[in-house]
Image (tube, one colour):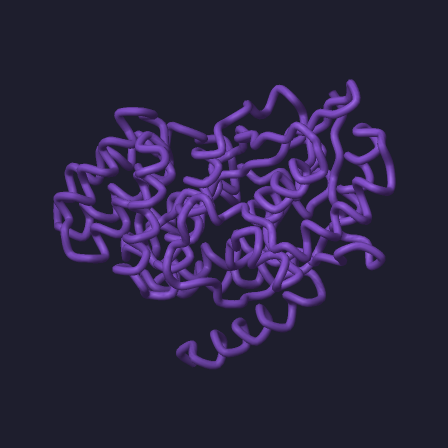
Length: 359
């Protein structure tokens, strides 16, 4: 088994299709693209092993398709081809279709990665990662479209992933689009997408979590709670479902229940400073400043080296709690440990802070 990494780097936002397409159309190749694969890949070499390399390079070289990376939105194969850019999942679906068109045995792989989250206020979406296994001419390879090359190398390792069905890969596609539509405020439209995801794979935790988010957005907290609890029944350490459940319970004034789940969350990755930073931000967004301060403080203490963002977040929540003297001390540390781009912003905040302080 070897791995291949597609060198791509570009970010941007373009609206995708509104209504969910039929599953059988998601990986359908436009006739023009199919013809190019036949001409530039199949006719160029009879070696299936060589086609793997050629196809991977072809996607991003200017002499080929010249695609760029774009974080949002997630697109189907035809949409990625039309836009000339896409994210990891978009490229995975397109590459699957192109590899099969080139006569290769290609299949999606679900990759085990640390919890990935996309936030909308106090709500957290689960975002999975998939890549492509491809075989031909006695060769096996993994193609990963993560734009960070070092991370892509790790994600392509065989032990990190497992082969999944096309249906599950497509469920990831519909789930991603549902999450993206929710961040655009289109909860009812997002529900159509998540229903399709769950029709393809009723047990995809990320999709069930997104369903819970949608139910909460649409005003059905009982259905939302049931969805989050269902995820936790499948995986009692699912951080995204736990955070969403805490937010739901806190919003209903069920503080004791929320506190019990907070304790579960705090024990999961207690020694990870960046996880503590994320928990601090989550609790701050709920207005739970005491808990936010505790997590931000833990982040500062656990970090191997001083980090400006951690100091700045701690300063902000202390200021909101009325502890201005302590807030100023940590904002000074944020300025001291910031890079050139960050320093101006933190310095301006510190100046405004001092100007507003009682004489």
